[in-house]
Image (cartoon, rainbow, N blue to C red; front, side, top):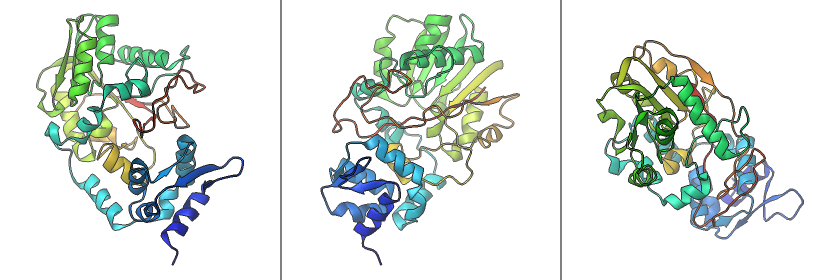
Length: 346
C-alpha cells in the first residue's frame, strides 16, 4: 500500500504538478510540514485548503496549480473517505440555518471589506461581469451586467424593486441612480449592509436591510437576485421560489442570476461545501426551473456560457479581459477567491 506522500505525489504528477519543481513549465509545490500528505489523503480538498491556511505548503502559482488540478479531475482519483462522505451528507441532507448568527454565508461576507475591495475592484460586485458589447475593463463589464438586468426586468421610474442578496449595494445604487427606482436590498451580512449604507447615504430611495429572505412579506413590482441562489441549497429551492412569488406583484418579473452546472453527476467538492460557505451549491441547469413550477406564471431560461475559463491569482483584481494585474494583497490576508459563470431565469 502506498504511503500518503507517495499517493499525493502521484495525484499531483498526473496533473503536471511537481513537489519542489525545477524544470521549465513546472508548478512547484513546496511542503513545509510532513503532516500535509496525510491530511490531503484523509480530507481531500478540505485538507489541501486547510493545510495551506496553516502554512504547511506554498506555491507561487496558485492560479495555475488549481487550474491543473481541476482540469485533471484529481477528486475522482482520490476516492471517498469517511470525513469527505460525512461532509457530503451534511451538505445534501440539511437546510441552511435560518438564524443569521449560524450562517456561514454571513461569516464569509462579514470579513473585512478591504479584502473584498482589493479582490473585486471599485464596483464591489461579487458575481461575473457581462463582457458582450464594448466592455474592456471589469468595471465596464459589471455596469453592463447591471444594465442588462434592468433591461430584462423592464424597470420603470418609481417602481419598487427587491434585491435578494444585495451584497454591497451596487445593484440597488444602479437602480436608483440610472432608472429612478425605489430599491430594497436584503443581505445577511452586517459588514455588507454597513458598507452599502455609507455608499448610498445620499440616495433616499434605497433601503438596505439585514435579514433572511424567508421573512419577507412585502410586495414589489420586480424582484432580482444575483449570485445569492448558490447559498440557498437544494432543499430550500421551492421555499425560495415561493417567497419570490409571494412578494411579487401579479404582473411583476423575477430575475435570478446564478451559477449552474450542466452535469448531473458533478463531483462533490468538500472544500467548497464546508469552508467557502458550508453548503455552497451550483444547481443543475435543468433543475432550478423545474423547482419553480407552480410558483410563477411564466419564465425563460438563458445561459450566458462560461465567463472565466482560467482562475485569477489570489489578491489579483482583473482590469481587462486579458487579466492584467492591477493590485495585490499578501497571501496572508487573501487565501481564496471565486469566480464562475452565470445564467438567468427571468
